[in-house]
Length: 216
Image (cartoon, rainbow, N blue to C red; front, side):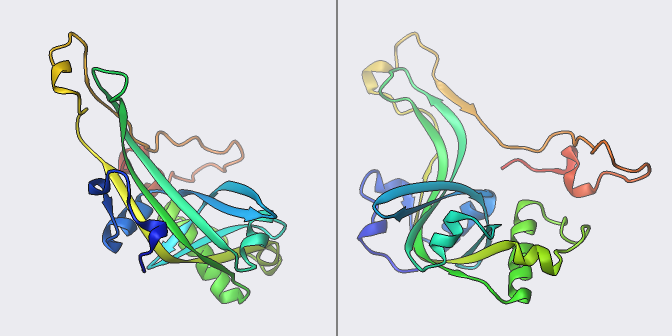
């Protein structure tokens, strides 16, 4: 990945990183991205699931998707992923914050037309969201593949930013009689709810059992 003025960290650069390992770890921990692009001067930001392989992100949706239709033209786009790890409650209103991990990536997208490549990309997305599921379900039919648009977004450059730890108050505020600290936040699967039409005798897969899932 290259580095230009687009990804130069200007505010609180000590919290930032351009290391691929850091960027990949954050992308792998999330599964919801926001894709920013512009059409005729009008900006759009659309949430979508994704999957990652090396410096490539895979996105999918309906063949009629406006976002995917615009991206496949090769226009520049921006993809962001943010994970909120906690609310940071300080002794002053000014110093309240959040603990978070985030990535901002810039690149160009390309439409995937080859059925084998398309199916492979869909598997990467599925396994990214919930590993193990793809092997249990019926794969996409030719008709379903035609109704689905899949693009690969090449990460040309990216930056990560992370905040961790307690509030950072002004020294004179530490003696104030106000509770301060961090309220942790985590995203975690809970008890699965079976489909009402699920036949008898089908067990909950291990990969969706709440006790086996790990929090992000």
